[in-house]
Image (tube, rainbow, N blue to C red; front, side):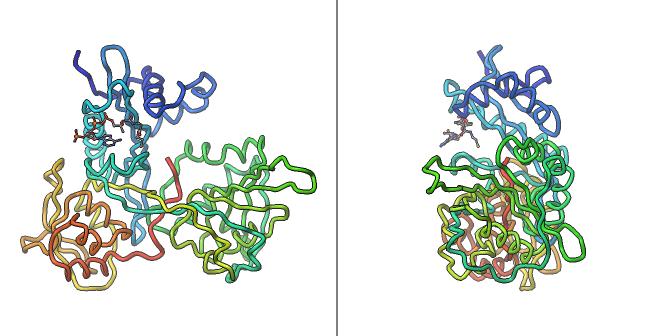
Length: 402
Ligand SMILES: CC(C)(COP(=O)(O)OP(=O)(O)OC[C@H]1O[C@@H](n2cnc3c(N)ncnc32)[C@H](O)[C@@H]1OP(=O)(O)O)[C@@H](O)C(=O)NCCC(=O)NCCS
């Protein structure tokens, strides 16, 4: 029987959720869990399923949000998510068909970018995605941090659980300083802040307030206790969000974190490569990087709109030809300079497949490195000029998992 790929009907959402879960080697969704999370399937999400007769055998979906790009514009984005095919039905082209349908529909709906988090690094380049932002997982040893320099003045307060959802989203939005940041929907906030709002676990949200009375940063963390003897009990902290409107506010939040009594360790899954706190402590080995990982995969859906929406550093212009086998409208040569972007008939100095220009777009991947590794072709001096134009500091980082 033919395998069918199409959008899921509202009454099929639980079936596609189960197919995705089994594809990802997880149990089916329980009733209670479904009641809690069905909103995130029903709103702000496009669900494409695959069927073998009546049996749902795969799913790929897209959240809708905006992504901050260099220069400050927020671009509509399809966040590819919940991808899974039953092990009985893999390698028969189902993901390829679901991805094509998703990207076609999202592009037609005006999304300029698409991004995702990948379970495996080899899956998505074939669909035009490039690695556009990295992150680190770290272990901070608070007792080895004698001081944090550069912290902003202000005060700290712990939020009552009932105030968490009404207070934090606004501070987050004002704290988005780095390209790669995502707008978070109500559903995402409910998920991110759940433990702090429920108050069932030892999860806390601390807010930093500037001397003028404006809340300008927050951190959310939880603590677990190792069950050792009373005299040797150890508090292990997982730090989730830590965002401030300025680097100095983030340093004030770090100062608070490392000064909490009884904590022996602070683990953070997702921080930027150039986390400022590493330089602000006397013993930078107290900020131990455990892993560097691929955070944000990106695909430009509308190349000209995307290239035109970001800004570029001062430097000599460069001409880049883009090749996109899925969308011929994206295939063109662009002159890119500090003064903007326009199509040109001039000979291209660099030739980039869609996954390469998508990787370089946010300034996290170097054109010179892409050239050196054969991912783009062309002229080395042009790649060096492109690196100047596309350069981004602070580094691109999202900080939101989806
Ligand atoms: C990843 C997954 C969705 C791929 O689905 P699929 O239907 O088998 O993919 P397709 O058949 O469309 O594969 C298209 C191509 O990608 C390749 N490919 C797909 N997944 C791959 C993987 N994990 N590793 C290496 N190659 C892979 C296929 O070999 C195929 O190559 P070809 O065109 O040269 O023949 C499926 O393997 C799966 O459910 N994996 C477990 C869950 C998971 O990791 N989900 C992703 C979460 S981000």
